[in-house]
Length: 274
Image 1 (cartoon, rainbow, N blue to C red):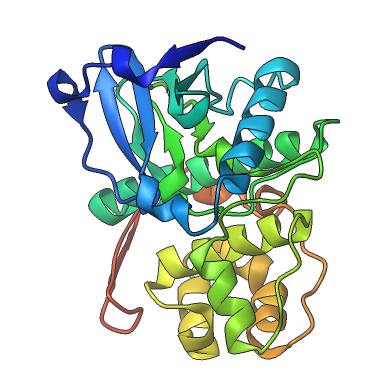
Image 2: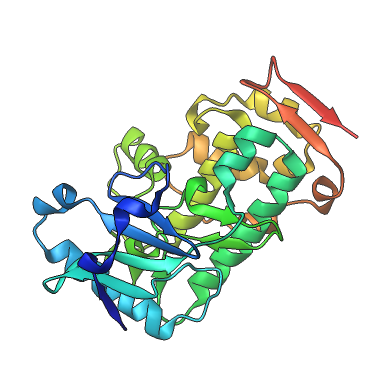
């Protein structure tokens, strides 16, 4: 895998992207994207984390053929130390999180969730052994053609090398139940997909969603009816149930009719179904 010196990058003249990230800054140079790590974040954890990231990035670059997984093209280094990554910039792309909060077009949102879930299953089936770990809708992108992409792959659990980031929804779910998180589990990815989906639709964490509100919205959205038993198990039990991929529960009826849903809560929201 090729490397490029950080000194060769004219970051001051690149477009710095306004993205919420605690570990890196993102810079766009035409069709390339540079992810430059914030050094202060890694000092306390020594260089072990960077070495682990580099090993994972190299494995994905050399052995993973999943096009929907945004992988590094080159390593950005200074004096042999990993400083960041060079990747392809996805033109005209939007995060699933941003799209939902701006458009509220539920059927389109559901379509992208469905594609993302299929992609997640493909990622899990890769023989390398890949777990996303930090699975949130801000890290799932789609372009104008509807192609889905998973980003931040350097933080994944790869080939038994632990992840370097855990999703906020997963961390909160385990913390509220006084449970410890076991890294590298595919089940945690599926759990996060459900948690983020419910949080997006109801604008509330799962523990704050009432069964009444859930059933009320289920009258309009068939897919929610299909997910009801899993919603109740996740909400009311400390034992995490075996979860399917969420696309297995999405009903085609919801994909084929326009549903515009505006809500800060279900009770005072508006549901327009045509």
